[in-house]
Length: 221
Image: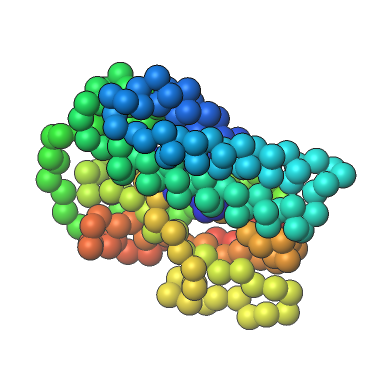
């Protein structure tokens, strides 16, 4: 689960806590919001499965490559369900701003802010989170973080093993994800431990892109 990815919490513990909050809040509002009982039952099952998989992946005795893969799959399924639930039931009336706050979401902003082509440059600072995980923090190299053109960040990266040639330019990076968060999480495969991750970021605003920021690298734990 890459993180997020946008409005979802950066950590699995955070995603699990939000899912439990959704079950609690939606359980009392399901009829008003038009959420079918079958949807809540499936969401409850996915939440329980993700919690069990996370416990197994964290436990020193049961933490294996298989347990790690199952945990990733369980949280990917839970994240997909949360995105679907938000799109189908939370992005329309009768939800009020207080309901959005209770769900851990940002109330809707109906005010249009004109914006143009991003001109700022950013890079990431990496920090350790857990096994096969790196946190990434957006750092502005040039420009203003408050510029309305800075709608989000396309984080590009590649994983390079020992003895393999590293990327020379940001254009050489092969994977990417989009985020609007100043901090996010990148989860790597079990076999990537000990390899080097190379990153570069470009600011995006719809179909408009700014210029590349500096490349950085970090060892995958």
